[in-house]
Image (cartoon, rainbow, N blue to C red; front, side, top):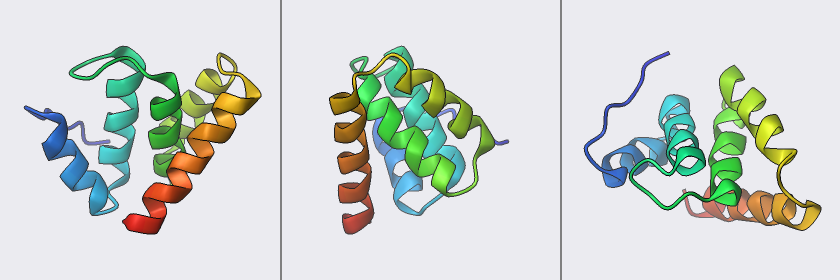
Length: 89
């Protein structure tokens, strides 16, 4: 799997908008670790969910791990954000 050594979140987001699963996964990693962005597990779940939907197996595992740390309403919010992103992408 290719890792994106982005200098900014914007570069990774551009790759994600192109539907690149590794870029979507990288955004999840950024949000779950707080690397370059505020730590936000709901946002991390959203990106891992999008990457998993495009076949990234690591994203499936991370999404499951994060879901155990979130409330049901937070998981629902992450899913809503993912659907909204799909609607604009």
